[in-house]
Image (tube, rainbow, N blue to C red; front, side):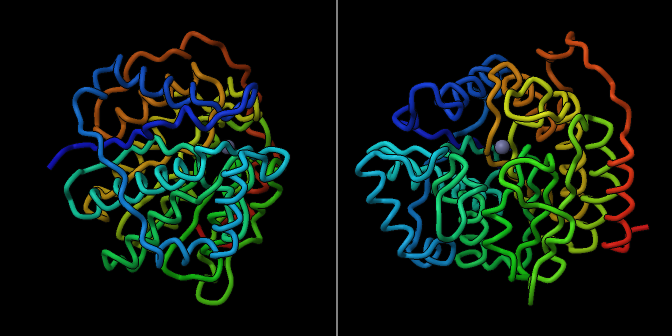
Length: 346
Ligand SMILES: [Zn+2]
């Protein structure tokens, strides 16, 4: 078994728009950092899987899929934020196919951990629309494929991006087989992700949101991991953890106001890895969402791949930068208290 498997989205540079923050350089920055740390050369890269119609149609409506394909053919915007090019349809299928391949390899024990450079990203894409730079919901398709093709019954998606993964939450909101947990800046784009969004029907109490006030950093994230995410994972006991990772909670990211450092990010992944080792045969895979500062992406990707492998974090590009400590805010404390009452966590 390989300790790690990568997915790299060949040809992704053909999905771009001049001046747009969701740009090919993001993935190249991560790749170059991993090369520098020696990880890129050491582990295999998987080819994307072909996605079955049943899996695609379980996550996105056939109407949306045809509309998206047609919009990509014309290379026009889906909405104000979300561009396409004539290459985008194939690249979106490629990105989702890569997510599926990574999740499956880890599920089957062919690789111990997975790290997917999924681009275009996915967590804002709902069953019926593209939005927030996302076309197809990569992580949702990866989870659905494990359920349909590999017999998974209980999966957890942990979303650590700056933004709430409204698409992923929406897709699984009334299902009990995928537990969606997210921490994100609030209020912020896309406006969802408040505490009271907890799921319906069989999905009741299977969507868990921790809205973070601006300026939350390593300390707050660590508290959320210890007192919210890990206890809820222990209660649900997923067979595998799929992580939506974005580097936009980093303090240097231009789109947000959170203050996570690369070391802080590494620690979050380390805790999830330890939990997975103890509870679900070490099955954990990471799928790229956002993150728009290239230096932050390099620093964080080194730290989180090291965490996946149980290595010491490599040199931190951001360690010399000073951060203003705003202290734990009363808003954070109040949200933590409300969360504990709602989820009966003591
Ligand atoms: Zn984001």
